[in-house]
Length: 112
Image (cartoon, rainbow, N blue to C red):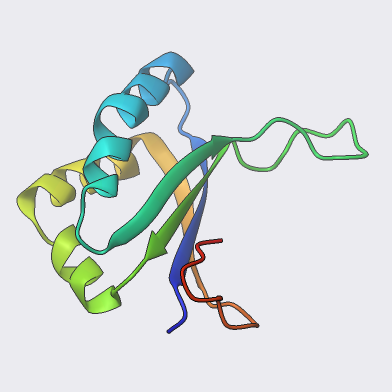
């Protein structure tokens, strides 16, 4: 069975301090989401540069969520705790969520 992957591309809203967001991500968002039954792995990446260019990346951060069971994920994000986390995230970031699927099957026991 293919792993469901959600990629979130986002920038912080004006006035949101990077240090405050990153502390919240490390202390609240990452451990809580990684503890959900549906999550295989959840990572947040800070963008640095566009290779071969001096241009700033169009997004400040990228989140990657590998999800084992989408039905369980829907239940997980409907909990009061996750609604609070999602509400806070939406208040501090302009985000685009993209649901993906692999072109080739994922080998057994392997997480991309």
